[in-house]
Image 1 (cartoon, rainbow, N blue to C red):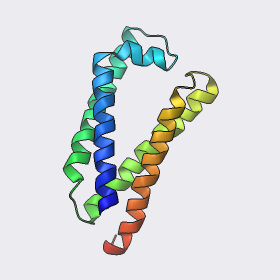
Image 2: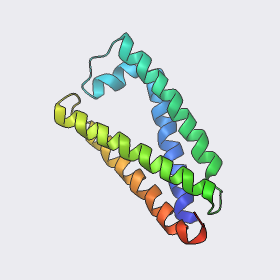
Image 3: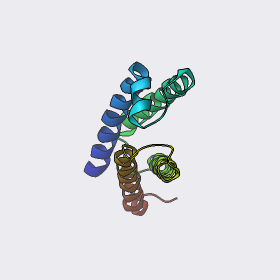
Image 4: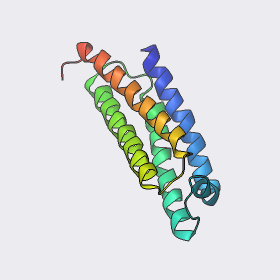
Length: 129
């Protein structure tokens, strides 16, 4: 249970920071990734910030859930989301669309995906799926 809470709080803190950054300075965020800042990129990044806000609320809301089908569903959902983000980041890096600053994001996303998968696997014995 302790690992689960740590992961939830870590995700919430990280995504709060990213949400604020995307809302406040989307052009700088884009430029840091090697993207050409512009109105379109800013709109998409600010919209992505809203999804990050949802993940913050979700992870804070589920932090005290005991092992259950609901918690398992959220864990696997977040793991798939973070795995997808890291995969897309890797693809864009190898295509040359973004610069090497994406590598830290890929590492963090993979770490979160693995952490939520570990919680999912460890909790299976408590939950009849």
